[in-house]
Amino acid sequence: MDYAALKAFKKSQYTDAADSYRTTGDMADQAKAGIENQITASMRKTLKGEAADAALFQLRELAKNFHYVQVECGLVSTALNAFASDVEAAKTKLDRAVEDAESRKFTVGADGSVSYPEGGEKTDDKMPKGGTANGTTDATARAINRQAANFDPNPNFAPAQECADRIAEALKEATAADEKWAPKLRSLRADDDLTVSSSDWVDAQEDMGRVRDGAKSYLDHIKAPPKGGDPEANADWWKKLSEREKSAYLAVHPASVGALNGLPAAVRDEANRTVLDEKKAEYRQRLKAIPEEPERFTVFRDSVKTNADWVKWNSKYGDEREQLREALKGMDAIQDRLDSTGGKTNVPEAYLLAFHPEKDGRVVLANGNPDTADHTAVYVPGTKTHLGSIEGDLNRGVKLWRATDRIEPGSNVATITWFDYDAPDALANATKDHYAEKGGPDLREFLDGNKAAHQSATGSTAHTTIIGHSYGSTVIGDGAKSGHWPDGPLAVDDVIAAGSPGMQARRAADLGIKPGHMWAEKADNYDDWFVREGGRNVGLGGDRVIPTDKEFGAQVMKSDAPDHGGYWNMDDDGNASVSLKNQARVVLGDYKGVTLE
Image (tube, rainbow, N blue to C red):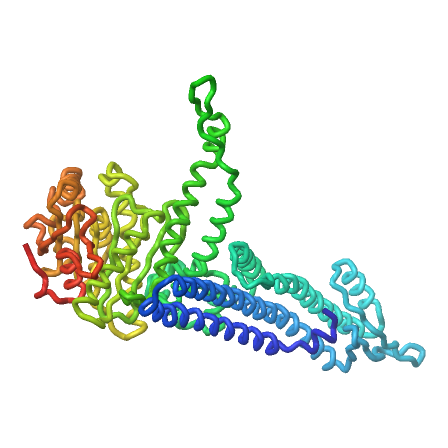
């Protein structure tokens, strides 16, 4: 960048353009939300058939396009702001150098050189001549110039050379910013078709990395989230950021923003949907890159043998392929829920509050906005839960919401599936408490964040119920015990344990649960009995006491669950089972309507 260009640089031209891109991204987000929550929701209620299905498919694709536009606009906006910030720093240095030169009656040339007048003591009745100083950023050349200035009889030479060097330094910084950002901005473009493919999302993920690296200086000037901050501190941090700063963090740190308890549900949802789309594309490409599986068996002289090539392939790729397939299965289930708002069952808008697919994966998804709900239910699944199996647990959250809506139509309820811990992968591992011991504090922090976000949005708190299925109830118990003074009990009003093997306590009161607000359910069949009695015998209870025991202090609700996983059964007409209906009444605070054993 030359002197004239830097001198004429106006930061507002770029920040205004950045704001325009951000506005365009917001418009794309609104268009996406309109398609997902209004147009397709209404169509699912009233239309059916092949034509309707085809139209819904195209609308979902259009919504994905708008989401891609939103993400890319966010990156362009952040890149422009970062470029403007980098060049503005150089422009400030240039302006100060020019001001210093002009204050000494020097003249700055169009090339950034500094001309100075004659001056100093006369020799033979002649003043030392003036001259022109050309700036440099080379350390050796600067040293030579300083030495020459010190020997020059004109005292103007040294300050002129200093101003010229400062101008050269500013021009160098501006040129470096221009050269850094020009290719990054050129790369922020989509291909020329109308389909947002996996490669487009992978490219967006790479764009995000490039912008994040390039904008480090700009982002460093924005106050970062509090390290180890509690949900209230996170909420306060977000509230104090400007809209431009919020946009920048969402654009380049979606995974971090999406994981922060205490932030608004809509913000976390926006961030985590970006992570979902990018990870889905990445995993699909990784799966596609795995070589085709060889035949597992070969036949040789009427005998069947394991193919040596398959053994090598399986050793190298088998586990990876299985993990990718399971992760993609879970991501598809999440996307199906995000796409199913409305319909004949009138399911509310979904909010993806946490997501990452590594290892067994993590998912937190809400039906309805928990920030503004009057009643919120948080469901914690148990043993063998992983990303690939998450569809059933997401459906339980949906069924619970539908059951509350059937009892009190139009009631403002949010139901959340919280799978944000490492669940035991087999019954043998479920005999150990350390899974719950690690997950409990995270559950406590999420509940605190849910409370803080609701308080920030409405100025009040919601009636909150937490439901633990099987080992999930053990996680709740450890979450309750993980608090220290002055933390107090969990940020919930009611606790339900379904098929619980124990909550690491002998009495509900030991967990800070108020009398009359601990509830339990059991199924009258062998597998549920086996889980409950197994937990009692391996020590997941307290002194061999589990929630369905009278001495624990829970109100044991009637249940018609046919097996250990049947507490959320609902028929095709939307009629809830007795066990599900009782849960729904607790969620609504309709305690008198609950039927007890």
